[in-house]
Length: 271
Length: 245
Image (tube, rainbow over all chains, first blue to last red; front, side, top):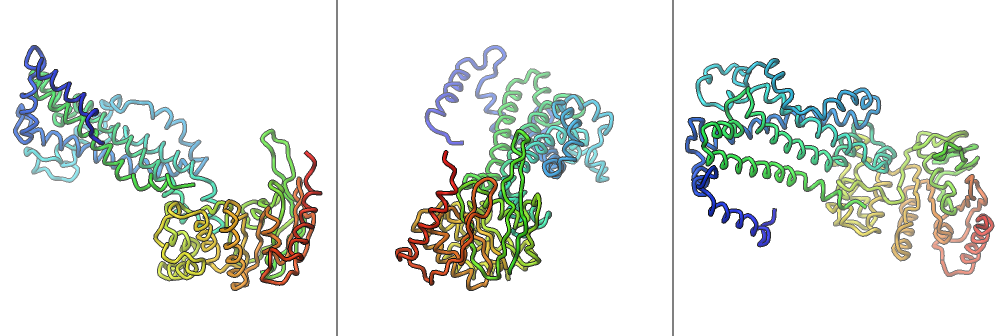
């Protein structure tokens, strides 16, 4: 993101307006929100620090995203390369894709109870301490993977299917076998699309986790803190959390974009 | 490697499902080490013949027996892999056939030197000029030291000076490796300059209209009267082929 003068004008204007009207009615003053942001490791509402809540949400999303990448990439490849497999899976994926992961939250709680990774790893002694493993519920991972896996599958499939035929033919006449072609031609050629899928998945996972944390099934994370601060009418904490959600979302997207940059540069160089 | 083609034909279906014959039937006997130029107007099925020879497509009837020899193909637009460096592009066919990394790299360095691309090993294709990209494509085609090399208008998109330089290079390299070559082109001068033999293809279906051994001594002089006479005579064959539109 390039910051330049006209781009900064609007945020500054908004801050000025806020400063002017803040502290009256429901809107907390600018300085009270800034106070929360400036001390990220101070405990908030006995829920742990802002840093803690943020890490909980981020770690959940990173794990959920990893799951969707690990599941979605091979599935996307299979669907992109095999027409039979694509037809075999098409009805299920078409039906499952528009289903909001949040619709599955109660179901996931039924299936996974409130099992978390600490229990999975047998780290029972952590039960009453504030440890990240306690906050990684399997149900959360499930709905995050659900939210992220379809963009990964669809973009990977699209990328694989739109690889220019001339590359595949070149590989064939140059004597490359199926596996070699998959690894050294299909994969790199589809990489820009695959990365676009990862980026979309990251965005969706981030949206999903904040909403999911407001619902039953957990009592930690940024989403939870937003809802809890609302119940306690602590709007300064709430707005600080909202600001962090927005910034992290941006960083996630930009980070993956930067990671995929190289493959995009090479695509631009195609003739 | 010598090869023979018997009654080769290819029929496609157009989008309406109406079949049309693109090629044939074609008969050809090509002795080992011959540099054969397949000359014809655009759309006469020259490329289809290369695709049939290379196995990219199955013939509708007839056969092309290229035996067990090593075969290589250079595409019209090079078809270099944009995500690989020049060196990795060139070593691709070796690596794909299981040659070790170091050996493949050494071989691609050698061939890159022969096509005049030393120093560009680590460049990516899009950083090179059109001529250099085609040199890379040639290097990739020759690195396996093939018995039969198929070239599909490799210099069609280059300017004349670049193309002339590459013509000499490709002839020299192929002669040194005793490679049998099928060189497809629509450029009469290029065919007469390069070919030990020039085969002219006619339109719809692509059929052999003229088959002539070129006995002009090498190196050939494009300005000599023998050369221009031969070119003129091929041009007449060309004119007769093209239907009045």
